[in-house]
Image 1 (tube, rainbow, N blue to C red):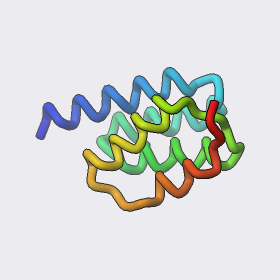
Image 2 (cartoon, rainbow, N blue to C red):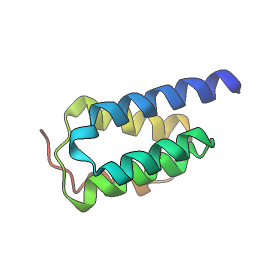
Image 3 (cartoon, one colour):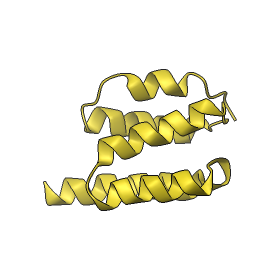
Image 4 (cartoon, one colour):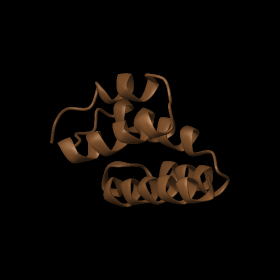
Length: 89
């Protein structure tokens, strides 16, 4: 499980870096803190929520990476619903 956590945390941190220019600094810090305390699902939901609030555009790869994490973590559809508000980049 430790390896899976590290991989998921790594993907989340990578997404945070790639999306940094579309996120308020305060939210980047908060999401990073969620990752640090192993709240990976919460981090992903917060990331999707913040992006959807401002209808930030996402590339197909960014969207796919986020949805792949939803599958790996066996989360509900909250993230995918939030991402519907984000247009293609």
